[in-house]
Length: 417
Image 1 (tube, one colour):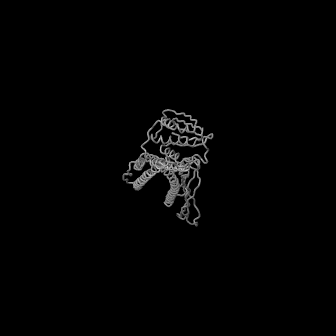
Image 2 (tube, one colour):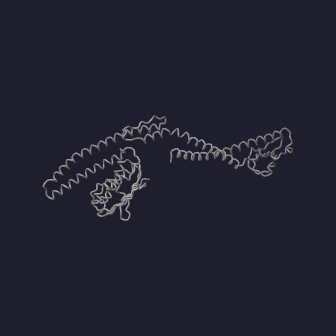
Image 3 (cartoon, helix red, strand yellow):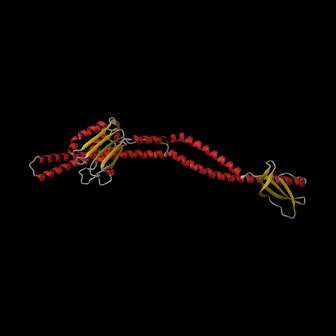
């Protein structure tokens, strides 16, 4: 979910709650003010009729539909203004209506009068309807302004943030340049940019150190390894016993294994650091055919039954060298871990590369073979990095590797889409 959408949802919810609470307060205030004003108006009307009686107007002649004048015992104390709700007949509407009745007594010329006056009360339903309509109208207006802000205002406010994201996406270790982000008037964005600039510089320094260490390690190992290889090959040409020959062969194989581990780890480091140039769409079919043909001797040594179904023009967006490394690892793995007289099936189409091979069933979940130094058989002479390289290549180029056991066959599929 986008940040602006989340803020909009929160703003809408808070606005709804605020309008609801505000509506309740307005309702109570309206009700209180209306009652107060009605009471004051009734008090004024009653005082006016009392003044007319004091002026000599006969009380029994003052007859109106909202007025009621009654003479009460003189000895009773004066009554202050008293308000109460009542129901009275209202002629204009021709029905009974809720009305507010105000009563107050006066002693005039030796007589004691109680004067009452009525007025129609604004019903609660009317106030509620008015408040609801008003609040709903305010809410709609706010939504319109919010929509306008979301469409236009947010784009302007978040523009520096999107520029920062674009620069982060384009950041590449190969350029050897830290991020240089523009200054921003928004304090939070400025702090973020400052942190990202420092972090990018730190990452570049770490990357250079790791790269130098990896290159130095590879170079320093290759030199003594080549010397060891040369001396072992020289010893093999000497007159030695069978036991000595086996020991020399074991040392030679171990030396080659070290070289293979160094090359594989170097390849993994380059893949993780994205040191290869931008991918391009290439046809995998000639690469697959070339690698299978190049491994003919290994296939014949194990007497494997090979079947292929290769669709031409099966294009994938990947670096050519990396594509060759990927397919080489997969097919080599399928041949190396196959059994004598086993099966090998390779299928390539627009959607996937599928390789099936016979072999000993694994001792654990096949998906774990994608982890570094993970092997299906602990006694295997494999270094356990082939499928780890496959996994890194798939991650880098948005491919999906799947390893399963189907009908006692190892099935490794690389999905392109």
